[in-house]
Image (cartoon, rainbow, N blue to C red):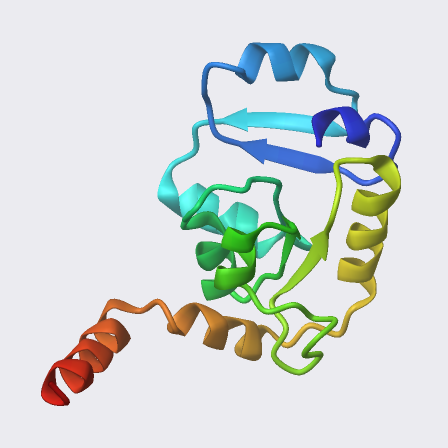
Amino acid sequence: VIDIFRHLSFKLRVVGSGSQLKSLSDRASSNVKFLGFVQDADLVKEILRCTAVIFPSDLEYSLVPIEANALGRPVVAYNSAAARELLIDVNSDSEFGSAVFYDSFDKSDLESALNKAIKSDWKPENIKLNANRFDPDVFKVKLTEILGEI
C-alpha cells in the first residue's frame, strides 16, 4: 500500500509502530504520513476524521476493521476470506455495506476501491450495525440461545 500511494494523489496516515516502520517510512512519498504509536483517544480521532480505513491484511481475525465500523467509518479491505467474514461489501448491499474490497496489490485495484469508497453514500449508523454483530453482549445472548437448544 505504501508503494502504491507513491502513484496516487490521496493522502495516507499510517498508525502504528513495528519492525518495518523505518523501512516503510524511508520509501514513502510525501502524501504518506507515519504517526507511530497513538493513544486510544487519538486513534478514535484519527478514524473519525478519515474517509475510510485501509485494511491490507489477510489476518484471520483483526479488530481494526471492526473498530473502524464501530465508529461509523467504512473500510477499504484486501479481498480475503477473513475480511469477508468481518465486513459487508457495499457492492452487495448498498444500504448496510461497511467496506469496499480490492483483489490485488496493484495501483488500479486499490485506486478503484478508494474512489468507490469516496463516492459511496455511506450510512454511518448502518456501518455501526455491522460492528454490533461482534459485541460481547450479543455473543453471550447467542451462545445462551445455542446452549438452551442442546
